[in-house]
Length: 260
Ligand code: NVA
Image (cartoon, rainbow, N blue to C red; front, side, top):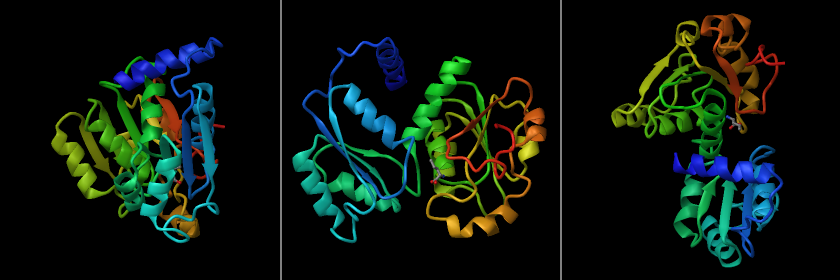
């Protein structure tokens, strides 16, 4: 919550046109992207620049972590040249290895397991529009994927009501669900019934049915996820106060037939 409060202050400062807050002056940040990105890459790059630093984008062909070079070597060498590392990778173990061998902070810019920056930013958006995250009901409809894991981890530290409605066989990681439930902070529901789940929602949240790295499963998933599309009927059941959110990129008409 302290990070979010601070983010609101810094956002207001930058929006006002003030460019005198330069905490990263003289600092550099290496950004490893093994997968495509717009909403993670651009704000990291522009944000770091606006706060005085220089960000270096390293795309899928530049480093080829674990293939062209071992992860521990990448971590050690980038730590010599940079003050921060951001990485978007496939295997979650890669970000853990980067963090283990790097001597500078490593920021998770999405893995197959989770996407913390996304959910922290979503919490910020919810606070901006609803006033607070505490006590709200957030209902995710779709695949129990990396986004859901980060919602569950958020629910382990901030009290709200989180429900995930996904088809059978596409539930989130059981250990992460258990961790969120055991934390005893938030109400957690995992269900296969989106219509029931969305009742009383403050936020209905959706994501693609086939994430990066799963695109060859898209046709099969489209069949499995029929009934989990956020459309007018779902939003009607959620009620008039419900906002629709999507981490994007969206496949319009597939998982979302609501927001056009
Ligand atoms: N679940 C999506 C999130 C994209 C921000 C993916 O991993 O592709």
